[in-house]
Image 1 (tube, helix red, strand yellow):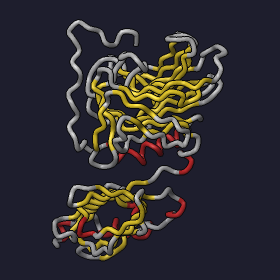
Image 2 (cartoon, helix red, strand yellow):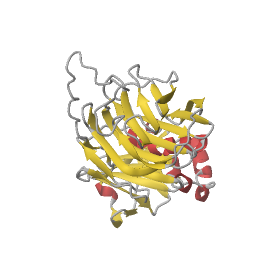
Image 3 (tube, one colour):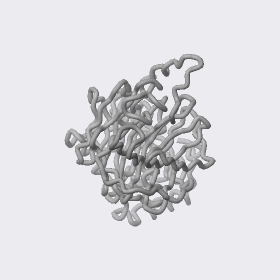
Image 4 (cartoon, helix red, strand yellow):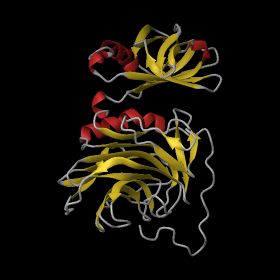
Length: 369
């Protein structure tokens, strides 16, 4: 191997070795995602803590926490390793079968079957507390969606199509017509409580689109309303909304959403303000001046539209997952969530989504949004 093939300097490599183990057991657990030669994908918690790499000038163990990806060539020995700090290391590996704890048990994977290996941090335990709804959309469940929060808020799918993604799990495609994922009696909503709504989405159309909405209507449409929603307006601005008895408070900052790009959006509702975050960054907030004595009620969760049973503000594009917390996440927790999950939302989908629904010329499908 030529020295020119190695883009990392010896000094940088030695620094990597000396710091690879510092504070490791204080950090969040790591997960391995393996792309196999046969096209399958395996995800699990690894038993290894490092990967041995032989370069042109040294052999060393690279701690998993320093690695983004390892791409293997056809001989399954020559590798290109992309590191967290942006460096690239070329060399060879001689790795024993990797033991992974997966959802279907413990497996051992020979490196001769692996095409690419990715290291992904897992969410810390603090981001699993307070969950009242957790839709991962990681598999097609035949018209329903399992709530992983343990609160039994099973979702129902109407029209939306599940799409496999090339890195992990899947997403639902919404065609801008009547497609929706919804759950009744799922999240108790009260103006005396704190909430956080988190979602990943990629829009593929124009117009006002409801992404996620939680809330309660105890007296019919627009009656006794307390709702929180993330919406993309027809100006492509990402909006955090809070509605109560037709009083609509909107946080509309300058952040604009482009087509066919994944975004992580978070709405944080507290007694004092409503805040909006995009891709881990704080965007802005408005004062929470909602008034009224609406008690807590079991509300309706709507994904892909602003209403449950009518096609208003329909979403066009992919929604990757949805989480709702009964607490206000901190800026640090939101940034951590984005960093952990960003990698699996940047790949292309395995399947090509269907074409969006055709809207008749002159019609206004966004009336009432």
